[in-house]
Image (tube, rainbow, N blue to C red; front, side, top):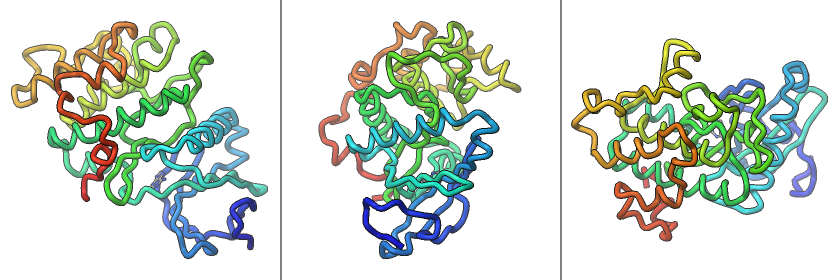
Length: 291
Ligand code: ADE
């Protein structure tokens, strides 16, 4: 067994515990490092046979390259990639363990978030997505399942398997998760930084209402609702009076069909709903919810 950071690790270096999550081509397990004072990690295991058979090699490569690039720049809102290794059967990603689990599970447990919690998570999300974009990366599949919580309740973005870099944003055959897919991808097969902003708008709505704004009985219906901007807050009669009008206003500003008319993240930071946020006070911004 080798514990030098430069040495390649192997599955035998870890005690694998319970499953934490499952993706289309991988399973994430909690794992304890035998050699590093029992440090806990989340290890994403990808079956080589499955990846090749399902044509997912590109996604795994993108995930590794993107996480390595983002790791070098360091940001508290991005799940850290500690190392990678492989054996004859699998590829392994040793990731930072997010003890608080998926934000979606917390939302399901609570039903909806209070305005204060919604705002807190949205601010952390804006800061983290702005960082990703500053590195030239578009996530393309932002949704509450891909947002994890640290042990203090800090938000961390994970799952960069569908990320792309700006400029190279050819989207053929790519569709993220139906409920968060932006109209320009559906209508023109185009996506850029503003596609992540669209997903952010969907999440503001979801945090406050408990479910995403565009949800049909099947994917096609969801897509039809998306391009028609058919969601409750877009009609005065179905906008609940109990929701702060500033939240509705910001969501309506973001959820527009034309990506060029969608506000950028710096513009969103200046929105009236977020007016009192001190964006430069990173310590306050990145405080966990249960600290
Ligand atoms: N589920 C998926 N990835 C995870 C991680 N890094 N930590 C905890 N749970 C996870």
